[in-house]
Length: 202
Picture 1 (cartoon, helix red, strand yellow):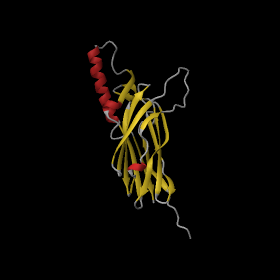
Picture 2: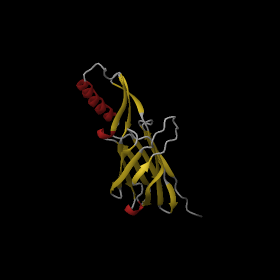
Picture 3: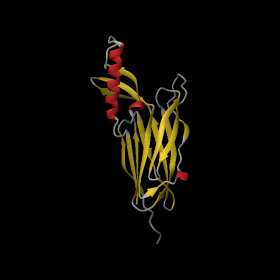
Picture 4: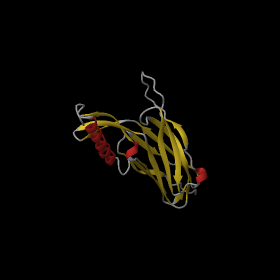
């Protein structure tokens, strides 16, 4: 009787601000104890109520972290680096250049890190990174777990529109002070992560 291959299940999936960033990680068994990890990330802007008004914000970058339990990804099997063009499904009347972000990676075989940074075009990241393979996971033991989180720092949070948060009659200095405060408060809402996914094999 052939051995039963254990399923790869998604045991946790959370997108706290899905209009701004929606992340989905898959696990595909390609051979015995080898799992490909394709990821899809959708970037856009999102409205958020804050301090009696509302604002629209997006991201200029962020950090994708992968934490592995009972498995590792050899450096030579680690993918997703370089310049990436984000594809936009929605067609608008006004032509817009696609967002281009640069992806760099570091970390260890058990704790990998990918840094995303906007390089060209829009003021924030907009578009989809579709099923890009992060790497091929080697399973050391079962159960093997993969946890992915997307985290952002204050410098990557960009406000594109505001309503009711300060008055245009306020002095430039007062408006700048209010904007700094609002950005910090918004960034605190994005902690400790914007998105989190966990896979389990075995």
